[in-house]
Amino acid sequence: MQARLAWLIPVAGAALILLQIPSKPLRAQAQQAAALTGVVSSSEEGPMEGVVVRAKGSGGTVTIAVVTDREGRYRFPQARLEPGQYSLRIRAIGYDLESDATASVVAERTTMADLKLRRTRDLAAQLTNTEWLASFPGTDDQKASIRGCAHCHSLELMTRSRHDADEFVAVVERMSGYPPLAFPLMPQRTPSPRIGGGPVSTERQREAWRRQAEYLSTLNLSGGPEWRYTFKTLPRPKGDATHVIYTEYDLPKRTRQPHDVIVDSAGTVWYNAFGEQLLGRLDPRTGKTTEYPIPLMKPSAPTGTLGMRFDEDENIWLGMQFQGGIAKFDRKTEKLQTWSLPKELNGDHVQINQVSPNRHHVDGKVWLQDAGTYTVLRLDTADGRFDVFEPYKIPRPNVYDVIPDSKNNGYFLPLGSDEIGRIDAKTGAITMFKTPTRASGPRRGMMDGQDRLWFGENRADQIAMFDTRTGRFQEWPVPTPGAWPYDATVDRNGEVWSGGEYNDRILRLDPKSGKFTEYLLPAHTNVRRVFVDNATTPVTFWVGSNHAASIVKVEPIDYGANASSTLPGRRPNVP
Image (cartoon, rainbow, N blue to C red):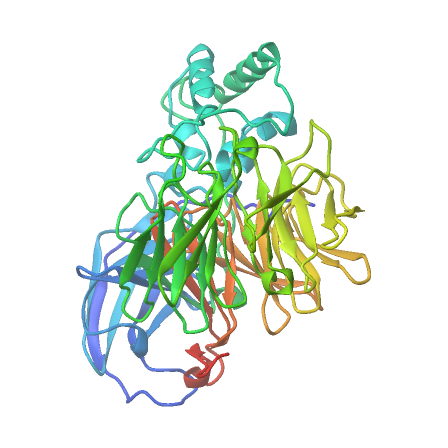
């Protein structure tokens, strides 16, 4: 499969033009009246399709974004922008606004703001990790040696450095001591190496660091003020991919890394912090957040949670990573209960990332996994005892996720493999199922109401489905190679949603036709856990932006239909 890459062309810029004209009252019509609209253009392209335009109110914490159509026009519906002063920003690879742009929105009027763009002076700051990897020279093996770095941060950090190969060896060694939850604002050290992969030869490790350092020194600015390769970029959105509204909610502090975001039946949004001991609640109507502290179980271990899921009563369960346990938050009482692994299972290497209480009403048991030993565990909530399942002998692949079916059998996803596994809830028997694609890298997923397991094949660039009742697999290659989908979920209409962990694109798949729609997010992030709120019409997609300390809502819009009926709204009395 060939990557869909486009070369940049230079553009020139002009000024922002603002005026206000009266608008008709908001009513059902072919095109909803806009609070703010205009045409985005450049001297090179003229009107530009697929430009993300962002509007943020003065002093506010919520940003609304829309995308230009094929005439280059963007439209912010009146229902989305309150009267006031807004700053405007854009996302269009290779372009910047000619100058700072603001607009005044007035009630019952439409503000016109045409935006002129110029060629960017800093293309490197705009590249996604997919584009960096496509631009890098070198072999697949060389690129694979650094691809793992991009699971947590932008490759731009490395490419702007000036380290030579010798200096890079020390940097690589130091970076290997940070867990994935660490980042520049909150560095934390790995307390102990994982043991699931088996012992590591110090000599081989240093040889690998040296090879990696030598390759990295060919990609950065150690040889001069300019990069020694040409940047390759992805095309902007077009067609259906421009029919979308984004809402981005700022979180209270820049240290927040919302790894998982989920929405309950009342429309309340919940998020966890990848590097901090807290659970957050967001009111999407006001943008107000409330945060609840999570107690430490190992005071000297790194902080933060990773996986977060609802049980059948919509209580929230969290995997507490290096703290060596799991937590349950009761939404009604707002009290938190924790379970710590017993001492014999709770070494410094333990890392409980995922927890799956989805079917614990069946037998009172909750599935989890340990990324330190690469094993699957199960908690009996009646007596607090843990069962341990070892699908592989050491060295073994990393069991990344475990998801129950309707009978609370556990299905696990080993990232470093090309198979998925089933643990029988009653007998503990383990059965393995090979994916059609070799080295597929099953990572994270969900079980639908028909006991079909949907998941991201992170290393094969595919979305997959395993029908647990028939034993049949289906796989769909993503349209933009290098996306590396992390997770997948299916909505009430049967459409499948995922996200490019490396390219900032939300993936929407019609599995019947195989058609994908890719929505470009307004800003850089790593798309990890994906969640669809089925209680809105149309459905809405939610994701945490760990790079921007924010939460993003993605709402598909059909501007060509009756806009008043296609603007997303919450269904009342959702069970």
